[in-house]
Image (cartoon, rainbow, N blue to C red; front, side, top):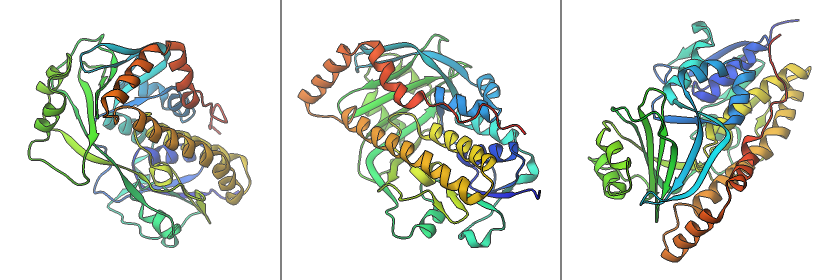
Length: 366
């Protein structure tokens, strides 16, 4: 039987994961990246239990754990540091720098299948049995394949991300501090550095010559260790948050299949964006391995992935609206009261709607 060939457009986390999965079932794969090199910028990623299961099927979970660090405790706090929610033992989350996670996936592929500085504008120009469209939220191929569908829209929120230069105590927990219209999150890495993010509502496209100063103005007087975290920060990245304006009617068009943000770009309020891409990669590879034709495999992928990812995107949008984006003092007080009254088991149960996912296969190895 002839070896099947896949072309993956986009060398981000989702594209590389798809390439790893397809290679494990014996496909010939090439990854085309528009940028001049393969790499990731950014801060931290919380790899949730569902994503770890997907990465295990892809054969890279142990290496992700090695470069990251497991965390089992998490807290939601108010700006004075008072606990609104405490969760322990909710399933291990691996905190890892985005660049390290990308490096693990890249190392699982031969250098010969990674091609950079390639600008792809149409599926028709690509030679392969399958084209995996993983070129992100602003996917040009998605626009070409589904010309009448609404593209990315601004969600009304801007965010800042960075990693501290200083080291912090090893027992620092994952935390999310919610105020009135502002949120600040802490994700401790294994080497003592801390990945952090801040988010607030803002007009689209606004930039500042002193982004760290803007963040200080928002949260600089909040509870410890937030001031110290900001004091030990160098370069800060700022980005507006976009999501797809409307759910796609299909993730499949002919021999092309959409994956990751190209298919279901979502807000980050559940921490499931990259996790969904890893799930996508496993389901796609498993379907291609199970079904005799690409057409059947892609139909199965769409049938499984589209309902789940679009439901998670909706839930993430709601989580943002009901969380830090509240500004009315009465609404903020009611939110905090409701969070304090929520038992830990209920929080865990709610999270399991997203993290309890199980892959369709335990291994992709031939």
